[in-house]
Length: 464
Image (cartoon, rainbow, N blue to C red):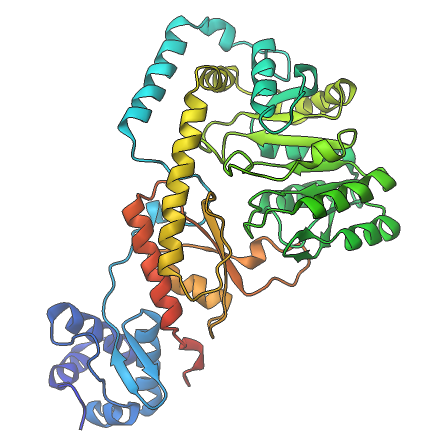
């Protein structure tokens, strides 16, 4: 006999105009909410329920598949089908599914810090020559902005001079200008086999090929880079060497030296996208110190303060190349916003940027500790001071099913295909722990992810 009473199901099915398999899934959902069903209750077998409801076997199989897709039930060989229970889902903001997809730094709940930023911004605008900030300006930022950029970059690159530095509206704009300047349509740039999706979009738009370099525990393969230099004559090497997006990998000192050595021997320009490098307390030497005559070093505020602060710095190998790059930047973006630049300069000069960075770093550490606890036992790639993690899928989930199912639970993650440059993405997803999610919301999402990993669904395996 069935383990639950289904008399009311027969009545509802007889009165419903929708397909029976959808109605059954709805009834399971309703009975959970009403208390007729409780987590771990055993459901009838497919044959039992088909007989009880006077339906064919295939219809009931589809109903259970739909209920599994919604996360209502779970089936395991030898154990039958049990109610899994309702789990509160996180609402997707505006239907965008951006909670854990866009790689945004966390927004710390620190009223004193927010008050400091408000006061600093208000003081800037109170004293600023607003008409001057509303005019066109020479590209690369004002003299004060470039001096401030050099000051910010000296934390990673001692000796940086303002003449080498350009201020631009975000790292993405600098990448667009650099790729357009260094490579022509049909030519190649070397990049990690898993890399920043924005670079893929830029290369596609400009008709430039990305030549993938396989990754290991130390970073992109130097041997593969040298082979590419011999076979495809790349016009540049792109690297995101610190807290790499998406894998969280930080390239080792030895691998940086090996890559720089190859670049120097073959005279290949290096684009060092160090967007996350201000977050860790200790980082290996940048390639811009190992091969300064070849390296364009990029740093900005979107990954250490907030994505809306569209102000970033490029340190060119020398003043002549900085001026040449300024022409490409002017052609693609005209100029960075003087108002945004002024705010970034103010926050660097008065210490607000450093205070924000330190607070975000501490929040990253707290959230990574939550991830380590809830995802213990899973092969997660993460760094304590970063705000994203890379989750290889060792269970029977496919990447697409895993991401799709999480989305039904209100948690959106990014599948590995978005990052792959070699058309062979691994079974993995990237999860962002930052953005507007509170720490409590972040923990809730991690619990949902852990539960999904521990109780995989198999809607594709059911006979339809």
